[in-house]
Image (tube, rainbow over all chains, first blue to last red):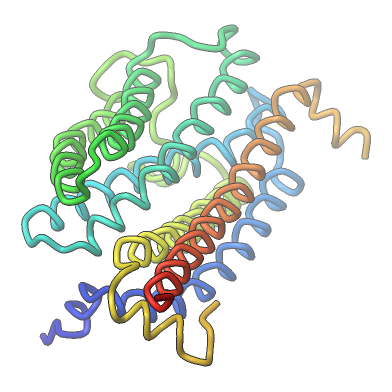
Length: 250
Length: 53
């Protein structure tokens, strides 16, 4: 298979131009899927047989957790590729993932607290799932802090890429924390042996929101990566050509 | 409608979760747009400075 089409994304001007055209095609499905999924989950889906309407927090808590983990994985893989092949665009993508991943992880933790208080009787417990998710948040914050602390961009790229790559070990720990240890947090209810542990009226909206959040993540992440590519190459000739030609980009 | 808003007594937990998540979605878009605008403005400034004698 010919991978030239993919390698071209390593070129900042190509990345900037093509990503600018891709983003709207991610944003519209994201909006539609999230709207449909939240309507289905918050309005249409039946209340849980044990937790009643409190279980509706699931429709935002689970997708937020999913995006947090996905953002970390994309960040670590992209940072590692940037480290090995010295691709600026990959470092820009990794840098773009961190703030989004951190904000989704934080929202996952907060919505989890809002769910934990009525169901467990505590806002926070030192449970493997909760602690490993908190560690994920700290990895995002550490990554951003490290980048911010080093003035030389190339050194910041390399140092933060090492941190991101090491931290990937935490992603499977988060996922399997409910299996490996005795956790108060419930186990996987969607993708598990024997199918989802809920009726279609509940899992379909959940899956819609998860897909919507996935599109959303890639749209916003690519917007940020595009801005980062432009910021890094602000003195480059392609930026000059881009900004001084009559038809202005969005 | 008030039945719906009441959320079987869990309104104080369900609605803040949903509002917070919607705020997260809106703020991340605004933040990304802001960064794009800043990067473009900075690049334009640099071009203008270079062209000025």
